[in-house]
Length: 300
Image 1 (cartoon, rainbow, N blue to C red):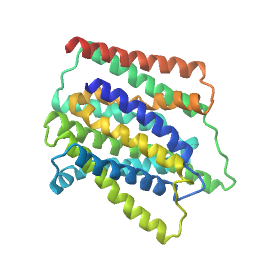
Image 2: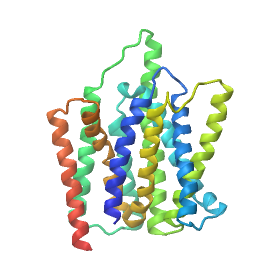
Image 3: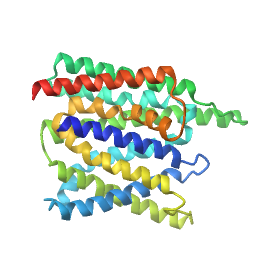
Image 4: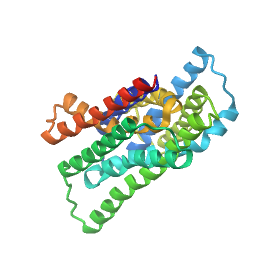
């Protein structure tokens, strides 16, 4: 089932990425904080419902145990939200998506996880496709000229810094998940999910208080794209923990393919044209996913 969970995570996070971009206002410096509030509120509601519906065995200690991983994910997501304001100026996609390759290497080095030849071929194809799509997206991005040359330089530096920081911190969080959920099984999938979502809710409350103090307008009607993204983000997070607990090494590249689904979905729903090379890369990544699915079927 972990394979299905990984694919569902990629699809849902691809959709979330689409609405994150729609909901981000470059001129609004509080936009990233508003996204944190939206995601935290939706995740918090889901966590509370999940605890009671599934009778999850959960204690405050679980939040503490999972806090380092929760912190890395939330910080990396915050950086990602901030980076969306400078996306057209950066090499964001290829750098950010390199985190998956880094995680796979760390898991293989430290835990000598079992992978087949077919797994390796599938992983290489997927990562090549993800990196290729990032380069294509970068080349097609519109450069936004700024009159002030100093400001232009500062924004360009930020544009490069954000994806690099995201890559490193997200990779550490994902590696931590692979260790605590799969390799060492230090915490249950349910407890990890609830711990992360409640931690995000706490961050959302702090951010909401800050926005209120700053007298910033924030409503479901005006920021509906942020809440739609939050719903998809939460759905993806639900399947993510089960995918990582099942087979972290193979789940990571599958989940990393969410950026491919994001491009495809944006072309479908925003009526943007999918170029020849984007189509080739998308098909290539899907081929890699199919290979991993075949490999999983052969091992079952």
